[in-house]
Image (tube, rainbow, N blue to C red; front, side):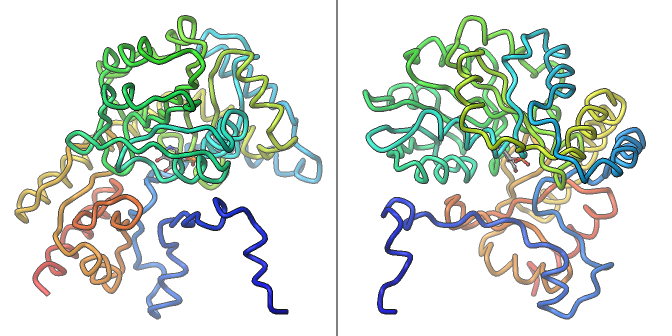
Amino acid sequence: MNMDLCELSPSYVRSIAPYQPGKPISELAREMGLDEAGIIKLASNENPRGIGPRTRAAIEAAIGEVARYPDGNGFELKQALAKRYGIDIGAVVLGNGSNDVLELVALAFLGPGRAAVFSQHCFAVYPLATQARGARSIVVAAKEYGHDLEAMAKAIDDETYAVWIANPNNPTGTFVHGEGVEAFLRKVPERVMVVLDEAYNEYLAPELRADSVKWLKRHPNLVITRTFSKAYGLAGLRVGYALAHPSVADVMNRVRQPFNVNSLALVAATAALDDMEFVARSYAENLRGMKQLEEGARKLGLEHIPSFGNFITIRVGKAAEIYKRLLRRSVIVRPVGGGYGLPEHLRVTVGTSQENEKFLSALAASLKE
Ligand SMILES: Cc1ncc(COP(=O)(O)O)c(C=O)c1O
C-alpha cells in the first residue's frame, strides 16, 4: 500500500500534537530498570492521600454490579450535585473526567468556520479540543503567566463561539479573582460559551472561592466544569461534571456517549461528594506541602510561579535535562516546555511530606550534577 492512511483524516486532525501525560511509574521502572516501590510520581496533580474510607466502601459495595451497564443518566450523582449547588438537575452534565465535558463543549459549539479563544500557557486540552473540531485557535498572550482576561475579551471576533479559562490554571497555577471573571462575563457576547474550568477549586483558600454557580443565572453562556480527579482523589476512575444553563446542558448531553461515566465512578463520586472531611484534609495537607516546596525551591535559589492549585511550577533553567536527571533518581515530575511554552520550568505536584522531601533532595543533586 502506497497511501499513508493518516492522510485520509482532515488536515486539522493530522496537525494535532498528541497530549503528553505524566510518565507512569511502571513505564519509568521498565525503561530504567528501577524498583517501582522506590519511584515517586509528582507529575499529574493527583491527590497523594488516595481515597477516603467511605468512598472505598462505596466502590467495594458496587463491584458486584459491573456486569451491568451504568445508569446512563447518572441520576443519583446528578441529583447530589444539583442539591449541593442549589440548581436544577437538568443543569448538570456528567463526564468521563472533566476532560470529557470540555470535549462535549467543543463538540456541541465548535466546528470549521468557528473559533475559540484561550491563553498562552493554558491547559493543553483547550487547543486540542478546539483543533479536533476544525475550529480556529485565538491564542492570547499571558500576563504574568496567567490569563489576561481584558485582552481575551478583546480577542473575541465574529467567529468566536467559545472561550476557555482555567481558574486556577494548569500548568502555571495562576488565579483570577471572582470580580475579574464577572467583569469578563459582562463583556462577552451571549453567543460565546465561556468555559470556566475549576478543576482545582477545592484547593483555593475559602476567601478566594467565588460563588461562580450563582453567575449561571445572569450568564446563560457560562459553563462551569469541575472534577473528582483532584481533591476528591478519583483520577483513575474518571469522573467530572459541567454546570450550565439547561439548554446548554441539553445540547452537550446530545453529543455525549450514552454510558460515558462508569458505574464505579458514579457511586464513588456520590460518596466522595459527601465526605467533606476528606476534602478539608486534602486542602490542609496541600497547603503544608505547598509551603514545603516553596521554601525548598527558595533555599535552592529557584524562582517559582505563585500557585493556587495542588502543584507548583519552578524555574530550574535547563528543564528538559533536569527532568531526565530527576528520572534517574526515581522522581517523575512534568516538563512544561513544548506545547506549554515554559522550557525553563518544571511542574511538580504537591505530594506527601516525604515525597516532597525526596523531590527536593533529588532536585538539589540534579542541579549540582
Ligand atoms: C485545568 C484542568 N482542567 C481539567 C483537567 C482534567 O481533569 P480530569 O479529566 O481528570 O477531570 C485537568 C487535569 O489535569 C486540569 O489541569
